[in-house]
Image (cartoon, rainbow, N blue to C red):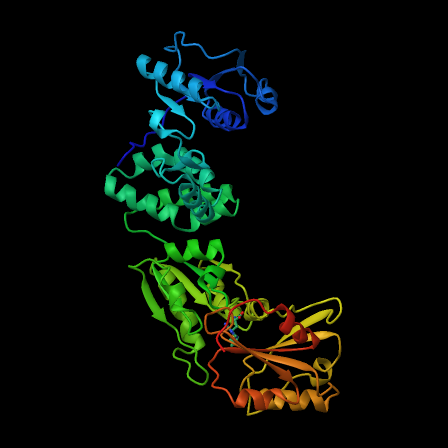
Length: 462
Ligand code: SAH
């Protein structure tokens, strides 16, 4: 470890910034947020720093830096573009034993500024020891993306209840478990949804009812998107990573399941055509039973749970049994596949509406409202339509669609195995029959498909 990370209490402390350009302004802003009393010494005062004078209670000294007595300062930052001045500030500070940072010059600095994620009172600092500040900033961006802004409010809530929890739960390891449950369960989710009052109520209830064993589970019905792991939402990722059990469908990629905690139990709930590993009713009850046993359950479904996903049925059971749950939308196959195939689902010159239908066969035939689907100026997206492809094309032609209407079949959209086959209602079934197609596939019908040749952007296997 090249640098020792500490958090400095600067409330009401005198700090000095030498220089008054834009970089100095950024450092002044940070010191101000930490409550410092800031003096700025600079020959020229930049517009931004000048504008901060009142709002940030700055003491501005428009003069060159001279090595007077610096002892009164707790911290010094030198942010000038003049090497001589920076050197002089560093030397003087060192002689007087005051911590100093010379911006972008770790060699002259006794401390360095980390990249900061500010969720006050939670503050996360990332440093590369000055060797790769851009990498540290990228890492910070990653952390920013997985830590919701509400973490600050959560810490505030914890602070409020800290003493009460200490009084009620005397044994430290039990206290730790209590807080772990608070921070990874319903109470925290309530804070994230902005229901702090509810969260407070629940935490009070949890304390009143505390008997050392109480814990309540919940279910997260999560849309895992069409395949590529980085098409998950931030919320999906966060909930997946806090789940004790993951119940997943066939359509969810291993790449996504691997994002769950290593120690989380993983249950495959199946769903292959004609080969339902677990009947839907058993899945509904499995989720409820796991939650009642105190588990946080991530129910991962391909695409969006509410689009041909039977998500509604699963939460109906949970609702009936009074189990906490939340639904996280995902990118549905229609929009994921269309985007990755360069086929806009609507377009002013082509389609003013778009319908999603299922082509799932019942008694060997696809029962759809063909008259409506054959209307012009719309895009029709058919989920689960591969088996019925020929029937679909024939029925549309029989109900008035032109036989040269463009149609695309997209295999495993958004993944490395994506393949797009385009043709017309008359030609596509034969084109598809010639190829080895792997599920899942989706069908897009309409003149928007003609844009694929021009707009295709995602490298795919051929
Ligand atoms: N809830 C899912 C749909 C489940 S139904 C969603 O919102 O996307 C399953 C059907 O979705 C598959 O038969 C196929 O038609 C489609 N599908 C899902 N992922 C797909 C993908 N990556 N590429 C092509 N089709 C996909």
